Image (cartoon, rainbow, N blue to C red; front, side):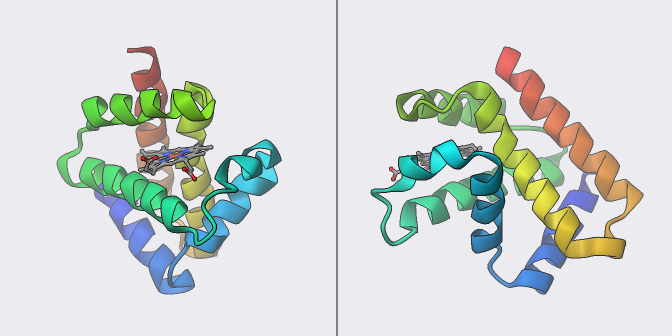
Length: 129
Ligand code: HEM
């Protein structure tokens, strides 16, 4: 089931090419207060690294059907320094899911919906661990 996540990301890249612009647009629309946090990232390099790390976490989960809680916890605590709390941190996964769902339109499947919901549930639960 988790492999449906990898399929959804493949489609996302097929539809949008590099999805970075759309994903950050979704982020700023929903959380305009985070925009100033990236002001020093003038060339988008840090945001690129952040998206890359998140996508790697997602694809690792999709491959092994297991979330890397240790690395996720490390990144989460790293973000305390940016004043990004655990709840907002987890929202980035939701934003990527929503962006994929928008881009896929009617190609978004029930398997994808269920697999993403489980991943997001685990990311949120991992906050409380
Ligand atoms: C909405 C949620 C998130 C917000 C608002 C956020 C915010 C930030 C900010 C402000 C920076 C530093 C920008 C700079 O130095 O110019 C950053 C860097 C980074 N973030 Fe996030 N982040 C979020 C979620 C995540 C998630 C879920 C991951 C990975 C699982 C992640 C991984 C990274 C990485 C790899 C970097 C760059 C490397 C570093 O800071 O040393 N972020 N993030």
